[in-house]
Length: 129
Image (tube, rainbow, N blue to C red; front, side, top):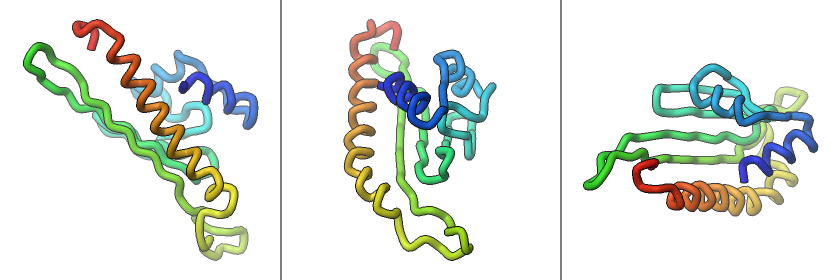
């Protein structure tokens, strides 16, 4: 699903990306990826902001020791935020119509991404998790 999003971003807003860049972002070698830039990075967390400053994505990993094997718990958060300021410098009163209309899609899409990631991990053999 992320690849579909990346394809749409490349086509709609000229923000292409590659699998190699995704790996570099995860390892800390890159601070921007497709339509996002790193707002804050910690050893186990990443906070990213889109190029318009309107959405945030938060990712965190936590090592987990299970009964049969060690693994990693993944956390993900996503938010659509109001614009910081208008052209005249005044605060924007809210999200604006386009973002309000897309909020429902954003929620569904976020859930679909998480379900897809979980399904992919569950298909892997236990020793690969």
